[in-house]
Image (cartoon, rainbow, N blue to C red; front, side, top):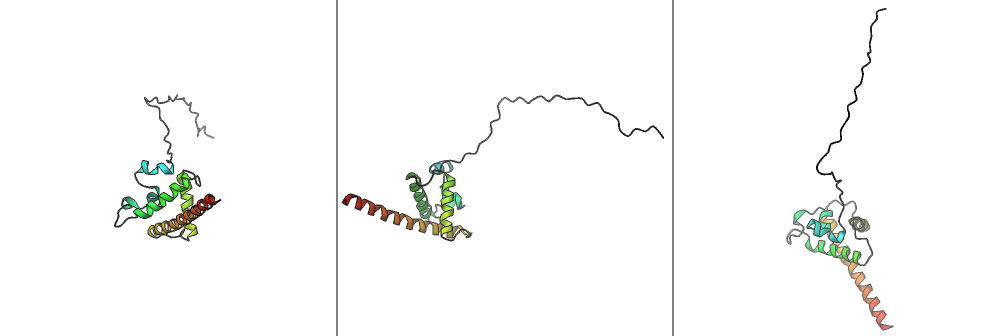
Length: 143
């Protein structure tokens, strides 16, 4: 047999890697969502306008939804201020999803139908809460 070599041993040379030194330390970017009550200050439009993807014309009096968005925003602000829900975007998202499911709109694709129905339902909720508040106030002063 012939003396043929199929493999040869290669001596490996270790290359030391030097860490790159930069003038500025790289800081990790943390994307923290602002509290719900501060959302408009940070993003220049209400949370509901972004949630329903209404675009930049959400407050146009002729083709937008200024009254509906205002009604929904006021309702959630009241709920947060009274302590019924947390001051976070996720808590408001969960409440919106719950209300949409109650009104059988979770499968609805048209934002027009969703926002109109949501605003009407929230007006109903606000009226019933006001009636309950007035009754409690009336009977608390009469006793």
